[in-house]
Amino acid sequence: MEQTRKEYIHELDIIQEKVAVMGDKACTEVQLAMEALLAGDAELACEVMQADDVLDDMIVDIEDSCILLIAKQQPIAHDLRVIVAGFKIATDIERIGDHAYDIAKTVQNVTVPLDSERMKWVQLLGACAVEMVAKAMRAYREHDVCLADEVRRLDKKMDEVFARAFYALSEFVTTEAARQKRITQLLFIARFLERIGDHAVNIAEWVIYRETAARIQQKKPACPASRDQVKPGD
Image (cartoon, rainbow, N blue to C red; front, side, top):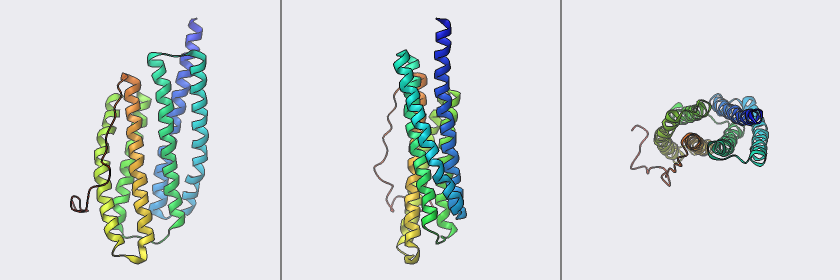
C-alpha cells in the first residue's frame, strides 16, 4: 500500500513538472517573440512560430496524464486540486503560446518601421507580460500563494499600460496614413500582450486554488480607458 502511494505521489509530481516546463517554455517564447518584433528579426519570428507545435504536443501529453491519473486513482481533496489546476493551467499556457505565435507572425507580415515613442509602449507591455508569466510559473513551482497574489496585483499595472498604449497607437493611426498597417498590427500585438497578462492571472488564481481551495473570480473592464481618461504622457 505504501509503495502504491509513493508511485501515485510520483505521478502527481511528474504532472506538475510537465506543467512547469511547459510554462517556462511559453514564457521564453513570449520573450523571443518580443525580441523578434523589436529587432525586426523574421528568422527568430519563424522559430517562435515553429515552437508553437511543441507547446501543442505538451498540452496533449499533460491532458492525457491528468485523465489517466484520475481514472486510475480517483483522487480527492488536495490531490484532485493538483490535477485540476495542472489541467487548467496547461490550457492557459497553451493560449500564451498561441499569442506568442501571433506576435511572431506579425513580424513576418509587416516591416515598415515605427518611431521609438510609440514602440516603447509595446515594449513596456511585453516586459509586463513576461514578468507576469514568469512570476505565475514560479508561484506554481514553489507553491507560493503570496507570489501568485502579486501576479494578480500586477494585472492592474498591465491594464494601465495597455490603456496608454492603445491611446498612443490609436492616435497615431489618424496622422500617419503611410504606416497605418504597421500601427494596426501593433494594436493587435498590444491586445495579445494584454491577454497574455490575463492568462498569467488565471494561472496565479489556479495556484491559489490548488493550495487553499479558494476560488477567485476577477472582473475586468469591458474596454480600455477612453482618450479623455488616459493619455500617453500620464
